Image (tube, rainbow, N blue to C red):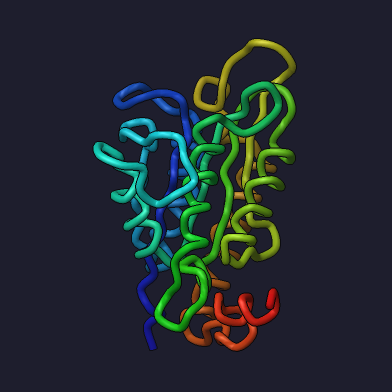
Length: 217
């Protein structure tokens, strides 16, 4: 019996607009290579190519293109936040994405849960020096609060030496054994958990907005 088709959206939070080359996207595409083998359709969204104002709602007024991205997120089974490291932390674009996702707290899915329930989250990180763990841990924690599930080894990263230097592509980061291994683990674990949740979603009892209202009351 064939595995069910899954959809993944990769939110590339590079600071570079298209068509400039993105090292973060280069690593993300290696995750997609594994997804391609596992019956997963992937879509990469370069967030800076859209007009997205700061805010914490799902729509910030005329000209806001965040709803176009949010539609892709809601349609996905797997959400991968891809971010470079700047000053030791995730990019400002990744921060913006999480802040805009805050608007989903005011919405529900068909059974009353937050709309990101029963979706699986992962993280891709690239950069020089340190900060990969900090970027991944903060982002994955945020995604769980928004409703996503996170399997073991849900991130892959590559970092270069201290100080200015070659980035992922120029440094041939795709040849790094550890990054190759975590990329493979991440892809398989995200897909495995997404298939489980597709077959047996987290039930609504106890984790709906109605239940939250009753508890707070």
